[in-house]
Image 1: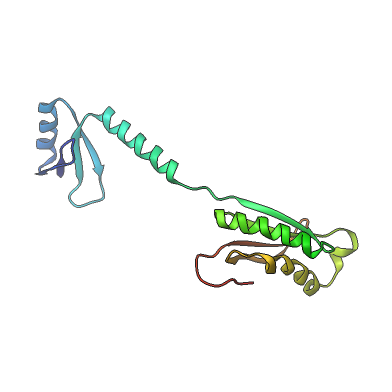
Image 2 (image 1 turned 180 degrees about the vertical axis):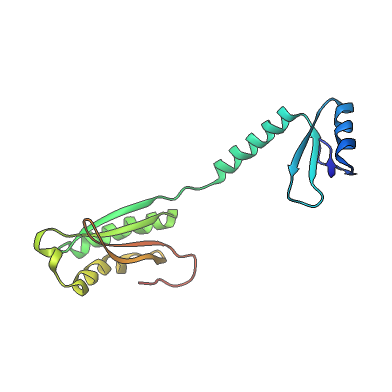
Length: 161
């Protein structure tokens, strides 16, 4: 087993019994760091201090992690171009922040039985106004409220539709 000291310096490769004896002499614990590597890596240090360091690393990683939400944008068949532009402006802002957006075409009554090609065209109208580069994460599909498409930020080049 490869043994490291508390500061992370390599002390060498020792059998388990000898490594345990070294830890006992120093009055600290022998902690297995990586059991999958060949040879196994262990560290000679206080277990409480080790747990504290791991907790601090986890907190730091959690702070650095960015959460993404799926924001929802709802339009209707008769929504005017100016209103679509305003909604697309909001969608562009959300895309810039890294969120996914579910664009829903809200259908009521008779509009649910309209031609699918016409409904897709109505849904695509708002996508043409979005200024940020995006890609379609989930294509057009029926949703409980009508027809929906999910888009997300495209780190690549051009705008897709």
